[in-house]
Structures are given as structure tokens and as C-alpha cells.
Length: 109
Image 1 (tube, one colour):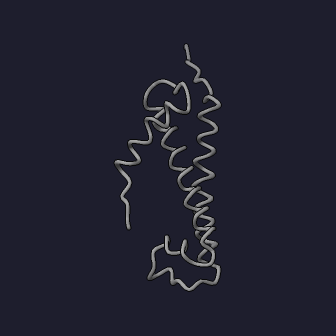
Image 2 (cartoon, helix red, strand yellow):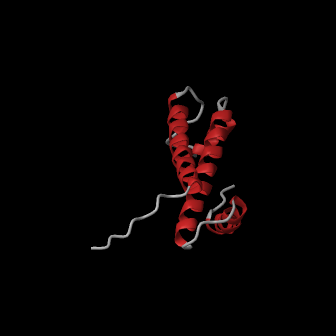
């Protein structure tokens, strides 16, 4: 039996995967913390983005930044695996992810 051995993921894929996990987990943790802090907003009747206008707005901005890191990192990993080749640079990956984020993400105002 001739078993083929899979090569370990590249360092770039590993770091992007860690970035995606940290971004998603960090966003969730910060939103839970914001729900527990005293606020003038009721989480049942307000959007989560309304926390950005409260006294702890910097935490919500940090949560949104972590979410962005997580989405871009996760998208980069997924696009890198689906193309059968490892992107040559971070710019190549970002060039492929950026149009998708503009196309697929709704903007609420």
C-alpha cells in the first residue's frame, strides 16, 4: 500500500487560521462583556452596533475590528485552499478577498 502523506499547512495558512479564531472569539467575548456592563441600551430592543455610541464605545469598536480580522483571515484561508495553490503574498490574498467582502456584506445605516 502506497499511502500519500499530506504536507503540513504552510506558516501563512497557520497564522491566518489563528487570526480567524482570535478575531471570532474576541468579538464574541467583547459583545458578552458589553452586555454585562451597565448601559443605557437594552440588548433586546437595540442593535448590537448601538453599543458603539455608549460610554463603552471603544470596546464595540475593538470588537468590530476583531471581527474584521477574523473575516479577512478566514476568507483568505478558504480562498487559499480552494485555488489549489498557496498565495504568493498577502497582497494576492487580499486582492481576492476584498471584492467578495464588498459584494456579499450588507451595509445597514
